[in-house]
Length: 144
Image (cartoon, one colour):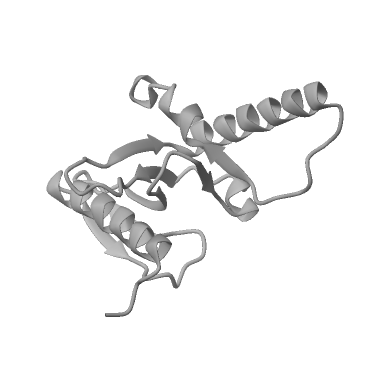
């Protein structure tokens, strides 16, 4: 049997998991199947409000990478970061952020990187932007 790429399975598991949770709560959900670069799910709330969701998934507690194009403000876009554990009995973890919370976390992550660079004495090489799992885990987004 051919071994499948883990990241591909993790991303789909995250997207279907988020779609499942939203549907279970009475939302209408459509998957874009990768055809919309900044949107994974198109949704409508039970009260009729339309919004989109960008899902980022991991199977270990590292960095959720994102495209810089997602930094453009979009009040109707939400972000769900999903930790899909490699161990099947473990439950996924969901971090739901509105667009402003995402922008704030990105700034926080950039500030942390700058502080590390100051201590190090030189800048890191350019790499894909990301948000550390630990940064998300220390926030309670339900209160915001």
